[in-house]
Amino acid sequence: MSLLVVGLSHRSAPVSILERAALAPDSRGKLLQDVVSAEPAAESAVLSTCNRIELYADVDKFHAGVAELSTLLAQHSGVSLDELTPYLYVHYEDRAVHHLLSVACGLDSMVVGEGQILGQIKDALALAQDQHTAGRLLNDLFQQALRVGKRAHSETGIDKAGQSLVTFGLEQLAGAGGGHDAHCILVDDAVPDATAPLGTPGVDAWARGKRALVIGAGSMSSLAAATLARAGVTELAVANRTLERAVRLTEILTEPGSPGRANGLIARAVPMSDVPAELAAADIAISCTGATGLVLTGEAVATAAEGRKDRELALLDLAMPRDIDGAAHRIDGVHLVDIESLADASADAPMASDVDQVRTIVSEEVAAFGAAQRAATITPTVVALRTMAADVVAAEIARLDGRLPDLDDKQRAEITQTVRRVVDKLLHAPTVRVKQLASEPGGAGYADALTKLFDLDPQTVAAVSRADTRADRQHDTAREQRS
Image 1 (cartoon, rainbow, N blue to C red):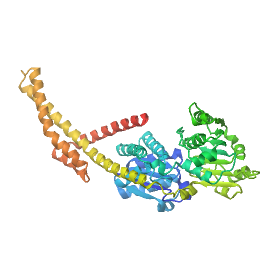
Image 2 (spheres, helix red, strand yellow):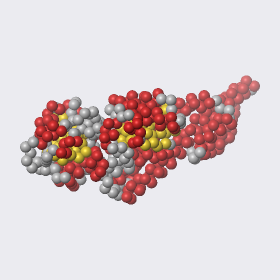
Image 3 (tube, rainbow, N blue to C red):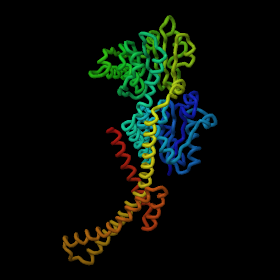
Image 4 (tube, rainbow, N blue to C red):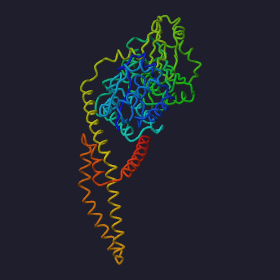
């Protein structure tokens, strides 16, 4: 079996295709099940964000795997295969590993070095585990990606090479002016994340003393709200389809010791029905939801922009598909920044040395992952060999008991221990060496060779492999829960 990735991202496809191909949260589980039901695939995971949709699978046939994954992506996205195919990219085996590790480090992000992708990879792994479509390969791969991403951020300055999409979008608005006494509407409905990013001087100066409204209570809105709280906004209202989540976010933003509390922030939860009135009073709107239709129509934006005189209405749309009508940028007094314009603006050169450091880390970790996976293929065979040897020892000791019934317990124990030591010493060097050889490129054949040389039962080897996979999955799930 081999790792295969089929996907599209902001690097390969225009926004119009990405937003049409976006997968609804409730359709991702069905997609994973359909992948593992297909003949070429044994495992599956989907990484779906605002600017990428990638399907990962463990397949036994490359061409059939590419065809099947492409077809399923088209079916579940609603974009025809003929239309989708020109924008798809394919990575296989080591290149697939390299791709995901690069994504985890932020090297493939719209804003280089952004850390939010780690949470999205974590969510992708959790979904695959919940759907029971992640086996040993994808569990190992996604766990490795999370570790490598954290390593890149802790060992290099990649965080300085680019900012999160939220911060970058706010900087674009701040650089455009933003007006006075701005009122900010942030829209999101992802998983809550109270981690507050560090503010930037441009955003801080622009947002200080202004009012804000957050619609949604998820990760993207939490990031944006926390950024504005650090910058010193004076008032923040939060609206969400589930009001309790909105209340929780306002509590987090103003809890003792938080930047919001330190800056005297007034935070309140409001019903979704208040959005039109809040938009009319707003100077800034930031939207990032999972809605399939527009959250802010052109008509709603035009109404909100009426009678503003010199007060600009700044809009930031981070959603895919988009939440704010693209026609809004043609309305007088309205400034719109969306995913497409952010992609154009993110061409600023990151810190080359930090990016080079991260690329080196990724290359090292790809090699380490490959060696570990190759070594893992021999482990069930070695375990089966040692199990067979233990059975032989047990059978011979039983035969000895029948021939020498007068042996006392001490003598029997000494003979048993001696025979076991002889077997262990004979097997030690070959098994250690075969593990080393198997971890090298081209070492996949050593497991078969060992099976044939010692006439091992293939069913026993397969049973050990299945048991190891179950144990690894339980261990990885427990470790992920702890982290």
